[in-house]
Image 1 (cartoon, rainbow, N blue to C red):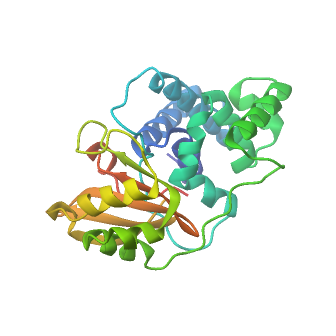
Image 2 (image 1 turned 30 degrees about the vertical axis):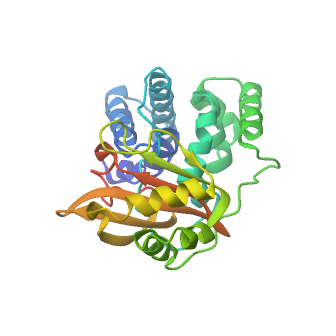
Length: 281
C-alpha cells in the first residue's frame, strides 16, 4: 500500500466505525475495500472508490446484522479517544449515545446521513456512493433527520461539557454503597446499558430510572473484578477502564448533560480486545 493510500485509512475507519459501531467489523470492511482497490485496476479516484466500497460493505454488514439475534442490550464497541478539541459534529457523532441513536435508521439512511451530515460530502457524491439518485439521497437524509429528532441543516445535540473527575466520583459513590449520592448525580430518567453479548454477566434489559440505575450500580461496582480502575476518555466522554490480571474486563462511559443521562458498560470480551489499540477520529 502506498503512503497516499495509507493516509486514507483514518477517514475510512471513521466512516466504517460510525456505520457499524464495531472496530473489528470496521477494520474488516476497510481491509476488504483496499483489497478490492488493488485488484480493480484503472481507478481514477482512489478516495472515491475506497469510500464507496467501504460504505457499501458496511451497508451489507448492517443488513446481515439485522437478521441476527443479540443477547441483551447492544452497546457500540468502546474506543479510546484523545481529549483535544475536535470538530463538534465529528465529536458528537462518535459518542456511544449518538451511535445508539443511529440504530433507528435503515442501512441506506445511515450511510446517506453520515456521509452528508457528518462527513460533509455533497449530495451528488453521496448518490454515487449509495447507488441512488440525488433526489432519493435527499429523501434518505431528510427521513434520517426526522427519525433522529434533528432539525435544521446541521443541528446536532449539544456536546456535553467536560466533566473532570466525574467518572471517578461517580464510581467512588457506587463502591461506597451510597445510593443517595449516586442518585444525586443521575438524571431522573437516566438509563443504563450493559453489553455482555451473552458472553459475560450483564443486565439483560436496559435499566431506566434514577433509582433502578443507582441500586444496580452500587451492587455491581463493589465486586472485586472492578477494583483495578483507570480513567479514560471513551468515545469522547468521561469513562473508566477496569482490568483484572492486566486484562481489560469492562469499559464504562457516562453521557453527561448537566446530570448523568446514561451509563454504558461493556463487558462483552469480544468488544474489549482492541481497547486503546485502534483509535477512531
